[in-house]
Length: 292
Image (cartoon, one colour):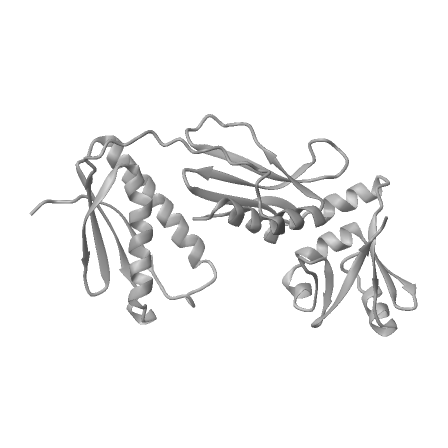
């Protein structure tokens, strides 16, 4: 019997096992791929990876098969070839041998930041964001594209970025952290546009827009609604920048709208701005008209 050195393991759990399980799974998957690559570079002829199954989750065979396919798809491009899949009661072992096929050098085609779907382009435009191709960091196959706020300077201000290594994209979004901001990592596997969507979903930059407004750049939006609701909205302390103009006409500064595109959960349950540029309040939507 041939011996296959084990290079890593995952644990597959049910979908209701906690919000951070997707992140933990991605972290372990990246470690597994990294170890498999190290074994290949070391000259090993075989390796084995596997995962344990949470038997309490009653996982379907379809989900288990999907996990197997994902692991094989991530490991084989390194230069391994799947030789055996051995399921047990609560685990699956996947054995690999060094591929006899010559491995062509992986050269990732540079991504074209101008070739994105119209829907994604519109989401960027209504947020006053644009894409910027970052210079190469010198790592083979790695690409980086930043998402930047157009706030009056040619280079803009980065509010997030996405990084590719091979076919997988990782997202980094600017999020609040202890009174300041940091780049939070969102691991894949993701496509280029999925990674950008993650940045748009989580990035917070209303403070940058507010800073621009304080410097004299004051654009906003007007919304028409019932007088009672308009007064309620204008009385809110968060976000700042909402004014009742009278007769149910409400003006929101650009920073207020930026805040409401990705509000904290305490606000987003009943008040936010949709991707179609409408103000959503307790199930009702109101079109927003941008200043000329």
